Structures are given as C-alpha cells and as structure tokens.
Length: 550
Image (cartoon, rainbow, N blue to C red; front, side, top):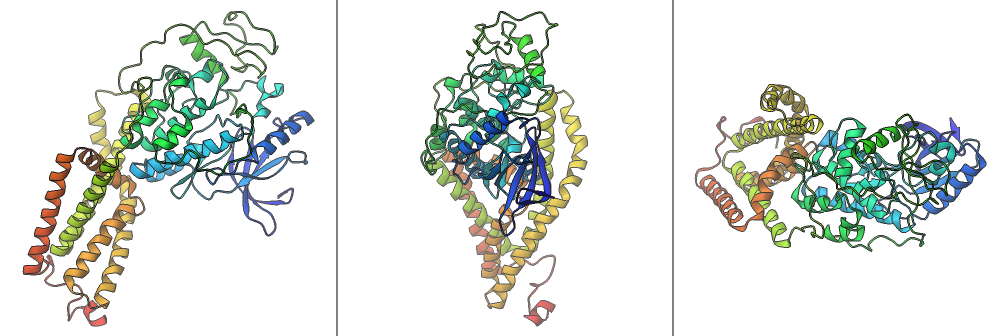
C-alpha cells in the first residue's frame, strides 16, 4: 500500500490522531508515517491549521526529538512523516529491562529535558509526555508524537469531549482549566522520569477519577526512585507551577548545559497543545466535582463568562478548557486537603533547591566499584570454579528478588499496602524465580562466552595462569555488570553501594575490606597456585583436551 510517495511497510502504532506506519520512499530512509484520521482533518480549515502547525514544528532541530521530515496536509490521504527511531518505548523498555538507575537514569532525565527544551524553543507545548511517547535509542531518550495540537481546537473535535493530557502524567493546573505553561511539561517530565526510575506511574493506578484527584492533590509515590534524581523530581512534581524548576534549571542540575541544543528559529510563547484519546473528559469533570465543588463550566461561546455549575443532569461531555480566546477559569480558592499518608510522599517545600550529587561522592562510587571489581578478579585468581559458580548463584537469586520486589511495589501502587503482603510475596517467590530464570541464564551464558574468549586469548599468548585469571576476572565483572538483563542485577547492588558511598567513613571501611580481601586472595594464589576444585588442574593444563589443541 502507498501513501503519497511512501510505501507502507508495517503498522507500528496507533493513537487518537491517526495510525503510524513504518514507511519508505524509493531510495530513501525509513520514516514513521502517521496517517491522520478523517475527523482530525475533516475540512479545509482543519487542513490549513494542520499545515501551519507542521510548518512551525518543522523548525524543531534536536537529536532528542523525532523531527518532522515530510508532510502532506492537502493530499487525498493526509499524513505527517517523522524520523524513524528503531527502539522500544520507555514503557516497553522498563517492562523488559527493569527501571533505570544511577547514571543511566540521570542521562535519561537530562536527555528528555533537552528534548522538551528544543520543542519549547519554537513555541510549542508538548502536553502529552508519557512513557509511551518516549522511545529509547540505546541509552538515549527520543521524544515522539509532539505538537499537532491546534487541530484539537476545532469545534467538531472538542465538542465530543477531549482531555488535553493523560491522567497520571497531567499537570494539576490543567485539571482546573488554567491555561498551561512550560511548567506543565516540566510536571509531565518529572512523572515520566519517575516511571523510568521505579517502573510504575507516580500517581498509581485505578479509575481515572482517583488518579486525577491524586494529581490535583500532589499525592505521588516515589518509593524506590534513585537518589540521583529524587529531589529534582519531587520539586518538579509540585502542585503549584511556580514551585517547579524551569527546564534550564533541570538541565543544569543534571549536569548539562541549558544552551547545549542547537538554537531553533524563534517562535511565539508556547501555546500549542496536543489532543489525546477522547473519553477522559467526563472522568476529569467528575474528579473535580467531587474534590472541588466550586469549579466552573464553559459552553461554546468564546466571549461569555459562565455562571456556577448547573445541576448534575447537565451533560458532562464537553472540554475542560474553553477556546484560547476565553478567559481562564479561576482556580478554586479553597484550601487543598493534606496529602494522604504513605506510600505517597509530600513534595519538597517551595524554594528548596534540588540536591546534586557531589563530585567527591561520584568519585567514591567509582572507587567502590573498582574495589568490587578487584575482589571479583582476586576471587577468580584464587578459586576460579568456586567463584564462578558463586557469582552465577548470586545472579539468579538477585534477579529473582528484584522481580519479586517490583511486583510487590506494583501491587502496592494499585491497591495500597495490605497486612498479607509478606505472605503473598513469599508464595509468589517460586513463580518469580521461574520467570526470571531464562533471562538470568542468558546473562550467564553471555558472560561465560565473552570471558571464555578472553581466557583463551590469554592462554594462546602463553600468559601465566595467575595473569590470565586476573584479566578474565576484570572482564567478568565488567561484562556481567553491563550484559543483557543485568539491570535487575545492578538495581539491588546499587541499593547497597550508593548509600555506602554517601558517607565517607563506612565507604572507607568497605573499600579497605575489599582491597584487603583481594590482596589476601592474590597472595594465597601466588604462594599456593589457584585452587581448581572440584577438578585437579586447569582446563588448559598439558594432557587435557584444551591443552592438546592450544
């Protein structure tokens, strides 16, 4: 099938505005081509508006954004083509690899903030930042599905009921009908980073009414989020827009340059928004009616201010916010109820600067990691088989426990803590062990193959046993830490190592113990040779099969 000059190769996604296909021009690169739905471009006015939006959004230039490369608003089949990003969405990436932690999470947060800054530079608000709209290109986040927003102002669309945002990733002010600013995208950025670092939505699951009420009250659950971004995300999730850091502040806090992106053509103040799947407007209105009965409702007249709400029999099938020319409804003047008790956390106080990890703490982390790597190498020099089997057992156990912990946290986010959670976790442990076992075996095989290749090279070069084992031990530690499926191994180990590196005295004691253990193991191996138990000699000793063929 063809659309314009493009051949559609496969269907890769679907949203409220259209269906996305992988497509290619003859002799050209692959693109993500969105075929727009008829109700989105139903008349010439809507197509003209789409053309203006595409022209504006085409000025976005950033490696962090899937840029628009082609479009045809006036064709028989209107479409918009963007750069194709061959990667999983953040939602799928976290589901398969586990939550991001440490430097990976900080890099993700910085990259997503830079993507938003590039969009804001041309005068566009994204308004739908969420895990499914962020693709992972290796370690790098790429923002997709941005901008085609003025189409949502069409009366034929808004009359059917649209909520401009996604519950759980929606800024509180939008629920009040207040005109959003860049601070709304900062709030959604923080919610998405929280998902990346915990594997769950920060405002939990459940009916849209309940989720949006938690958003409005600022009742988020950041349990388990890596300290490297915890303070910054907490500040960015503040219910009041003026209490959130700006994007340049976010980027600078994360160690980037607020002006690192290539400047785009200046645009007007951000006013564009994104339409999302219809059907949430009624739930949003119910949430506001329950928690804030003084809200006001607007009809289609763009110039007339409406009286207080009509009786409940009035239709709720209308947008929460009126047209752009209409005065924004006042925010209710009642005092918000206090946040719920745990597991939700109270946002940081106004004006609190997000904490940055000092260079000395980062140095302590690296030194601690090097000490652990040295201990692994020393253990392999002393007792290769025993240490290898021990690492394999620890890997399987830690990955299983990590999966159990993620499942328990997910259950708590859906329905809160229960008295029987401990019993349920214990009963589910065998199942989590079986589910995690294939990925654990894959990681172990991956490590064994690469380390085995390094060991064979050492033997082929006639390197002595101790040196060969030491080099292989270093490679074992690095490959095992970065291999496929290792995120569930890194997560529990980082929960031990990061707090230890935060305090100098415990960190120093831990490093000295690891260095002493490594030195003792190497000293013993030098004086007594490696212990090859349960075998009598090395696999490449003279007379063995490997020894005869090397």
